[in-house]
Every structure is written in structure tokens, then in C-alpha cells.
Length: 316
Image (cartoon, rainbow, N blue to C red; front, side):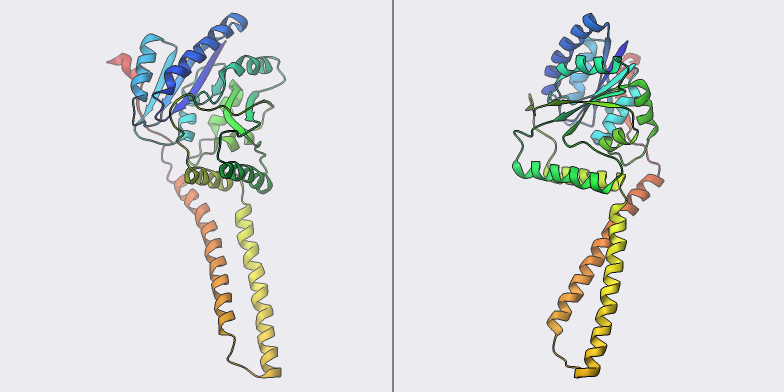
């Protein structure tokens, strides 16, 4: 039984040795208790520090360590997809290198899959201790919004840390879309998922690569990728304003016939024009967001470009 650990890394030079030490300890425990062998796949997402160097060093000292290095930064979603493609295990796990995803949960997660009742063991945070309150509030609202808009349910607090069966991994790999939102993809493919809760854990080293703007763009990616509700909203706003305009025309005509045509009222007219124009531009922006995603998909660009793997190192 082989378990593949997929670990996307971006500027994780400091955290990787600590992560490797911890997962190696858990892997040895699981080898004795479950007879499981491991491979560790580090995906270097165009890091600017020594992440690739550390991956090479870990591979040289432990042949279980494999790595994929991108030609530039393609994003965490591309890193997860590349790792899943490279994974050879009967079970495949995705997790972060900063140890915010506790490897100690892996034995229980594997037990859930071995029982035959589940195809995936996933994790979610029960608290957001350590996060700024504003960021936590927006995160909760994002999950509420996307679950109301889309048909795919995404669990609040869900992490990318999960252990999947081979058949679920293959199903995820079939979704080779360019604009990726892994939380939505994991949910969309279905399969039975058992959730494991844990409290938020601080990073062991380094700094988070996510800022508010990056998380905002990521949330838009998720909403656009798994819901057409914004397009329905844009169409509904168009219908409402058409009806309002028709009622307004009737009102103006009737008033002119009864009371004449006074020239006063231009401030309110300007306000109405600005409101209508703003709504039009907002709806146009929604349509443009979907159009841009379609444009990127039809170009059929690769999700990532590989610069180096451990196999290239052996050829030299």
C-alpha cells in the first residue's frame, strides 16, 4: 500500500525540513501499524528562495522524496494538480508544508478509507484563532454566499488537507480546467467524504503567502467557477430596471399632461442616471468575468510548465 503526499510549496525553504521531519515520523508509525509505504511529492511553485534546493537535498538523502519544479509561479491550484498527476499511490493526500495541516491525523484518515465506507477523508478548522477578525468574517461570508449560489456544497472551514482513494484522485484529474478551484472540484466530483475537525494551528516557519486581495480573487474564482447565479442576477437587474424605466415614463407623461412640464428636478435625474449607469457597469463586469474565464479556457494553455523533476536530476 503506497500513500502519496502532495505538498505544494511557494517560498517554504524554512518550513520544508520541519515538515519532512514530522511526516517522516508519522510515516514510520503508519508503516508499522498499517504496512503503508510513502512517497513525498514537493511541488515548487516557482519559489524565489531555496525551496528547490531543499527539495533536491531531501531527495538525495531520501529516495521517497520526489519533486516537481515549475518554470514560474503558476499558483497553488496548479501545484495541487501537478502533484496529483505525479502521484503513484493507492491513496493520495494533499497538504501544506507549513504544518498548519497536522500530519498526526493521517492514521485516522487512512482508517476511515480502509473501512470501505468512505472515499475521502477531509479536514476542516473549527476555529480561526490567530487570523484577523475582518479576514475571518469575510471567509465565513464567502462560504455562505457560494453555498447559496451554487449547487456544489463547500464546507465552511474546509482545508485542502485530505486523503483520497485512487478512484477519487483519478476523477479529480479528469477535471483539467485551466481556472481551478480545488475546494469546489473536490466537492463536485462527489464520493463519500468523512470530515475531521481540528482547531487552527499557527505556521511553524515562514510567512503566509495569502493577503486579502489574493483571497478575494480566489473567492471570485470559486464563485465564477461553480455558480452561474451572478449571471442570473445581472439579467434580473436588467429586467427590474426596464420595468422601473417603463413606470417612470408613464409617470412623467401623466404628470406632464396634468401639471405641465416643469424644468426643475435635474438633481434627481442625475442621481437616477448615475445609479442606472453604475448598475449597468456592474452587470457588464459580471458578464466580463465569465467571458474572461471562457477566453482563458478556449486558449487551451497548459495549467503549468515543468522546469525540473527528480528524474531529470538522475539523468545528469
